[in-house]
Every structure is written in C-alpha cells, then in structure tokens.
Length: 141
Image 1 (cartoon, rainbow, N blue to C red):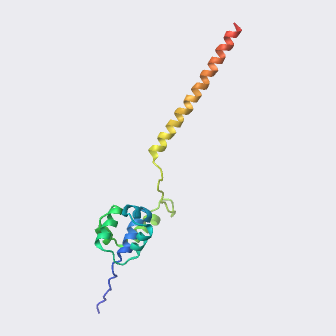
Image 2 (image 1 turned 60 degrees about the horizontal axis):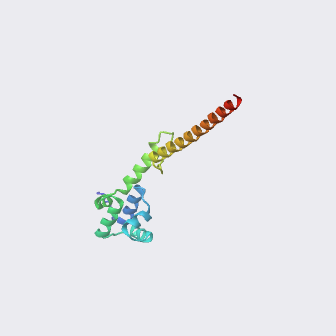
Image 3 (image 1 turned 60 degrees about the vertical axis):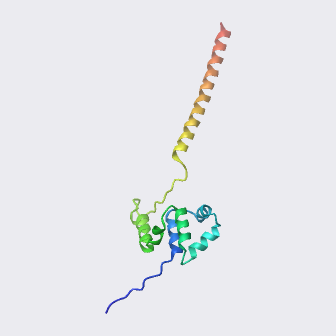
C-alpha cells in the first residue's frame, strides 16, 4: 500500500511575511520602499497568490530575489530558528537575541569628545588656580 502525501499549496503571502520577519524588517519599512501603505503590505502578506510583478517588487524591497521567497521552507525555517535560539544557547537555555540599536563607533567618538571637553575644563581650572597662587605670592613679597 503506497502512502500518498498531499502537497500543500504555496502560500506566497505567508512566505513574504516570514522572509520579512526573518530579516527583521517591519511592514512600514517595506511599505515605504514600495510606495504603498502598511495596510497594503499586510494585505499582500495575507494573500495565497501574489503576482510575479508584485513578488519581484517586494523581494527587491526586502533585499532578496523572488526565488528565495518562493523556495522558503516554512518548516525548516521554524526548526532553524528554534534550534538557533534555544538548543544552541550557551547560557543554559536562556534565549540570546541581542541586536545592537546604535552605532558603536559613533558612541565611542561621542565619549572621546566628552573626555576632551572634560580635560579642557580641568586644565582651565588648574590654570586659574596657578594664576591665583601666583597673585598671592606676589602680594606677599
């Protein structure tokens, strides 16, 4: 007896949503790149069928090609995310999902500029002290 598996229809809208979420891109960002509303992006992601022209436009907005979206394996993606976030964690099961939200180099430059300002203020204060001490010494003579 042969067991026949029924192949699920490809739901391109769901695949678009999953690709967007995997890439960490919000609907608003996709909408802005496409020149449409966030609600329109949501409607695209709810459709089972998406025409090739729109699929190409969305893929370009996401920075991938249309074939990557079409060939996205939903089950493998879910397994991979779970595997990476839970079983591969080095801190005994806790999820590590840290995304830096600032430019480290910019913060370093800001800190260096702040240090320079503080140093200049300290130097100015020390010069004022020296000037005051010199005046006191001259008055005693």
